[in-house]
Image (cartoon, rainbow, N blue to C red; front, top):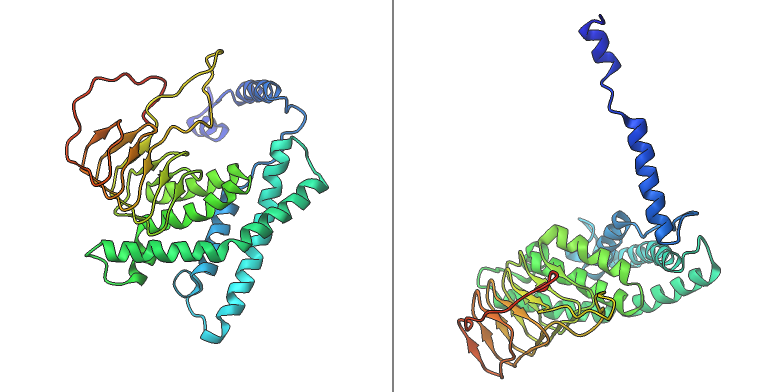
Amino acid sequence: MKSFETRLSAGPNWGIDAIVAELRHLRERSLEARQRLDRPPKLPSRKVLSEIVGGLSAALFPNRLGAVEIAREGIDHYVGHTLDSSLRSLREQVSCELLFVSGQESGEDAQERAVAIVREFAARLPRIRELLDTDVRAAFEGDPAARSVDEVLACYPGVTAVIHHRLAHELYRLGVPLIARIVSDVAHSATGIDIHPGAQIGGSFFIDHGTGVVIGETAIIGERVRLYQAVTLGAKRFPVDENGALIKGNARHPIVEDEVVIYAGATILGRITIGRGSVIGGNVWLTRSVPPKSNISQAQVRNETFDAGAGI
């Protein structure tokens, strides 16, 4: 009989060879079903994209989100260097997505298109900064606990999520939705705020506290809107086609007009409109449109059926 020490040094038998073979079979079956058996193209890197967003944020707000010490006369140099590095990395990630979608391993067309997309994205950065200035100001003015705009920019998870969304939304519009989704999910993981990059959000947008907020792909949010934690702007139901597959891309999320306030825990579902200047109280369940200046403090009790994950 082998000693305990001998058996321990040999290690237990996990049956790894059989597991590896079975995993290979499942992997190849999955790739074959997607017609990508030869060599699946690389996906954009979540880690790299997180670093890119960090670099872009630093370029947009160098004095608060940039390097610890930057002399005034060196700010433009820092911004230019940071932008160049971040945009070069972004071009590589955009190229990865374009090749992934096309199923190719390489291609000059993808490289040229990636350059064009990133160049256009870069041109939109000043407008993104303008929008973010309104968001940061709205957060400062909307929270009595905020002592300064700088505190809001550095500490508020809602602002962090909105920075990511403003960047992701432009990438989404420019035709790289996978990268946009990854950027959004980086923010979701860090803040607990889940904003689909397709959502259209006007200026002076403030999410207070923020944890648990969900905003769906086709939501449209106007100017000077404020949300609190655990608010959902979701879909009421998901239509299917004749084959039973979900119909994708249809407008299914709420329209929230200007100057609306939605308090904690409210759930607003479907392609309904919340009229300008309305106040939606906490824990309200709302599936009907309301006119401007409405004050909804408690949803009417309703019996409704939700299928296949509807409500998100």
